[in-house]
Image 1 (cartoon, rainbow, N blue to C red):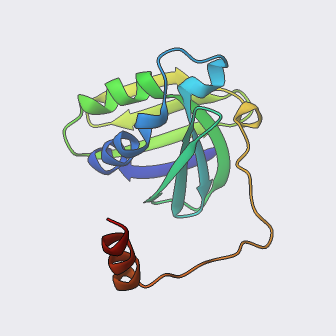
Image 2: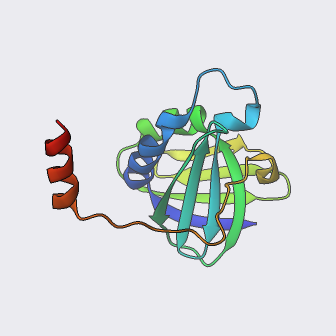
Length: 144
């Protein structure tokens, strides 16, 4: 079981930022979901189309940890109708059930197994390259 409290407007705005990667016709049903990864006061949310994964982080009130996937379209439709208010998410991570409590009432939706969500690739020893913006600008002007 995991529980967290988040502002409806904050959550909606962050979901809008990453929802652009979602497609209307996905080969895998899990790609219609957001992956919520909670670690105490930090909620990381992921959206993916397999080739591209985008994430955002939201500060929440919680002492819990866990993961769940939540149907993106259903959650976005629900959030768009809320005035700014705190929402309490209670998630049964064994049954993938999500209860969202608001000033307007209680809503229940079913999520999915987070293990089905595509894993993000990580690079063990990444190399970075820093280029001075002015040098790059003068180079592009010289080519132009």
